[in-house]
Image (spheres, helix red, strand yellow):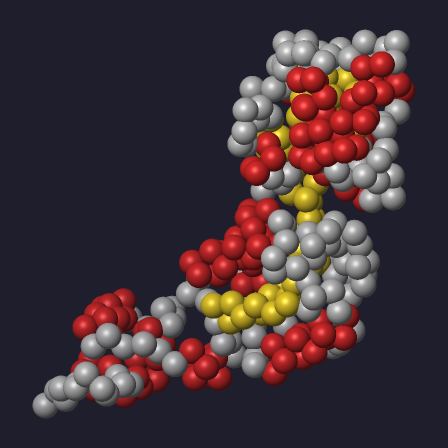
Length: 335
């Protein structure tokens, strides 16, 4: 006789197996969608599990199958502009695979990061994502582990590690080419700090696109400063006050682009009719709102997180640094 379940009772695998008329081993395999269970049996077991509202014990399933359906994410900037989007993408991708994530904040402390990593491994996670808050190279986790580890946004300096990062060079080429294709011939680049890898890569991508079109960067080099609106304003003053014509500006990020846009408006120069403009990072509070929005390059951080999560979930780890390009968010200022 089929046993009735009262509201406060937990439905077990044994209940599902009994109701479906199969062994517990067969029920477990059917619910795991194993290939070695007949299709009709699998469908019957899965239907019974649904009718009984069976919720599998994920830890028990992990002990039986070697996986706990959980992934650990360690970041040093839960409240920053970049890490949350990356983690959202990872969570979305893992959720689609019926996995769950455990997030930890190391707050930029290497010892705390290592502590979190050991704790997550103690919980038998199936893999680790180590998410940086800036695209500067970092060292590997100082521990031995057999579970897959993927470094996201900030690449790992260990060649045999797997890192998935933004392709700043290619994205800058895309930004610059959008202006060249609209007829711009006097293109300047206002960059961030000359020591920052993202600033250098974005300047390099701009230079490559300009030279590939037989042109020359205004001033023959990028202008280096910092990631600020003030620097964008000051650098644009320098560009407009020099003797070289300027009809397009590629900015290293949206803060710089906002300052440049304000200076162009102050000079009563039309954007994009007189000077085209593009920023980086698609920081909507700067580039997408207000009286003067501007085009920007979205670094597709959600997709970055999704790719990293899939690599861990599928154990498809290829050593090296893998780069994903960004895309243009056209708000009508590139020409």
